[in-house]
View 1 (spheres, rainbow, N blue to C red):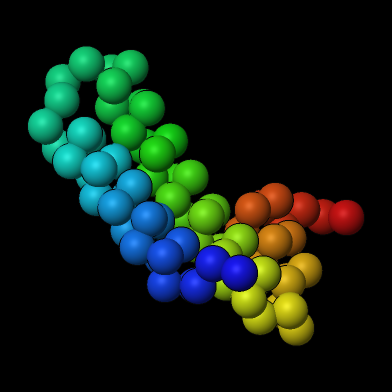
View 2 (cartoon, one colour):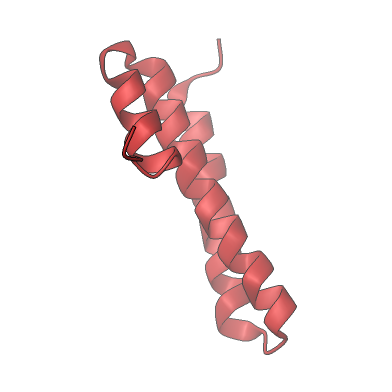
Amino acid sequence: MIPLEYYLILSAFMFVTGVTGVLTRRNAIVVFMSIELMLNSANLTFVAYSSFFWRCYWAIVRIFCNGGGSR
């Protein structure tokens, strides 16, 4: 099994890449792609934590990845 730290390092790298893209680019499409990269890195972090800590799996996935809908 892959350690949790590898997922967190990958997520941090993705987030920093997204922030760099938002701060350095002027093209709207590139900025939106960078924002999406930042959101994907946050989702990767939540899914990695939820897969390693089974007790809060559904709470994390539902609140953060699905928006905590009104179901």
